[in-house]
Amino acid sequence: MGIREKTKKLEKILKTLEDRYGKNAAASNEKSLLDQFILYVLAYENSLPAARKAYKAFTDPKNFVDWNEVRVATLREVEDVLTDNRVDFHTAPVLRELLGRAYDAYNVVDIEGLREEKVDRIKQFANDVVRGQWPWAATFLLAAVNNDGQVPFDPHTERVASRLKLFDVHDNLTKKKKVLKAYGQSLDPLRLHVLFVEHGKKLCLEDSPRCDKCPLTRDCDYYARSKKKGGAKKKAAAKTAKKAAGKKKAAAKAKPAKKTAGRAKAAAKRPRKHR
Image (cartoon, rainbow, N blue to C red; front, side, top):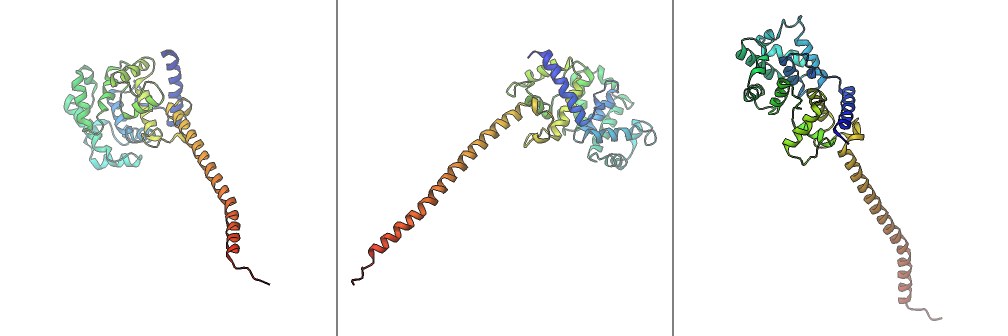
């Protein structure tokens, strides 16, 4: 299957995931760089619907005039908005760090200036914001800044992509990124990444994935191998059970015969009565 056919197949997969999790606002290039990164921060360890609701609450003029007002708000005020929308309150310090560093760097709560910065500076900004919580956050920000088709890379994206056989699990990191970038030329790389992250958090878990609820089992190599392995185990278990049943049946037949032989032996030992 060529890259064009694979891309069409992947587009169907992304639409299936969007039907499941909803369209992701963070993937929209119509939003500013700051808004895209804020949505990423809100959604990475929370559900997409909750992240979108929290984002909507922060951008509602009835609550805050702009992101600068969120920046100067108290930590408790930011936490309240998050918890009201079912987003973990631990996200509050990361959000405030992002807004604060944006202001310190550009004297305005905006990070469009990163588009003129070198790669190392962009990485440093992202890493300073998340403080090591998500070391791959820099790949998202770089992809959003450069808009060159490179798909942000993280454990969720790698796991889902390998199970869907977009690349071989044994390929090195450089090759995996190159393969994903080829898809990113035709598909929105941020959209792909965020949907794969959401799927990786919800169903395609590293340990004990919830395949029974997954809408992608037809395209999943992991599911096919697990099903085959499970079928083999089931067949082996049935064979073992059949063998055990046979032994039990044989033992049941042998028991009465043994009992009869024992009685005959005992009778032979008893002295005969003379008439």
